[in-house]
Image (cartoon, rainbow, N blue to C red):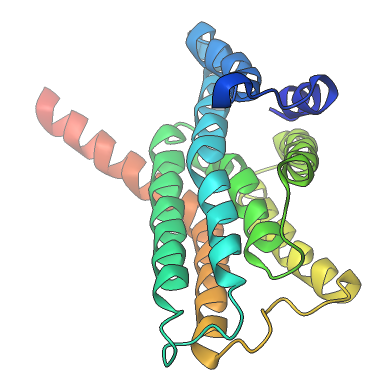
Length: 236
């Protein structure tokens, strides 16, 4: 996915007649990888490709939309500007929950890696949910290249860690990302005049993201146990 986004940046985001042809360059390679990874040894490739496609198709655009509506000046319930940010925030949280469950279901064979395939979506939250300058398509694609490159590197690192240690990589990475953004970001993460409610919406996404990255391996273990129990009862 990182290579696909880099190719789009290199070739340009062409939209003849309003059709975003560039989007095909992002999705088609991962779709082909998912369809061609049928052997048991390529199972993790298939899972990662499916989740990557879902991340770019669902989480990425909704986060961009949310960033746009939350930047309305003086966001608050008293002046009627809170509904759009609240709906966008609820949509992001709902999609993150769906994606985390999908990661848990697909990773029942090795649940400690469910947080790793959820990591790209989780890493997008600090970068796109905060209130820095509005992100253009080019800037968003640069962020995508960076996120998937870092996630790919951490996947390799996780593959050599023993036991349940891979399950700690995702929450640790997200926590470190928030710390680094707080240290190096020169502007406020909140829009001008943001009310306490608008700030609560931001922290709701933050808490949800960290919680899901932490709980995904646990959900995957639980689902594996339920699946095995159901299979054993069927055989009996």
